[in-house]
Amino acid sequence: MAWTWRFETADGSETSPSVVPEEFTTQGDAESWIGEYWKDLLEGGTEQVKLSDDNGVQLYTMSLREAAEL
Image (tube, rainbow, N blue to C red):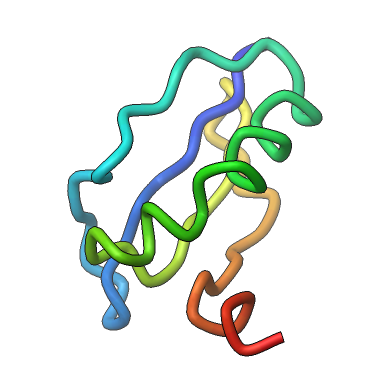
């Protein structure tokens, strides 16, 4: 199974990430990657991300801006 991130601006429009993601074979790998690069993504204009599996099922949306405020 493949896991992918969709990168979005604050209004939900898709944007190109400032850090190009690799291919993720597990949900944990995808989440570890976002945990490592979320600050760079936020600085590059990505405000939120959505994680989906290879069936197109969206698991969740996460705000990078809210993560920065924690």
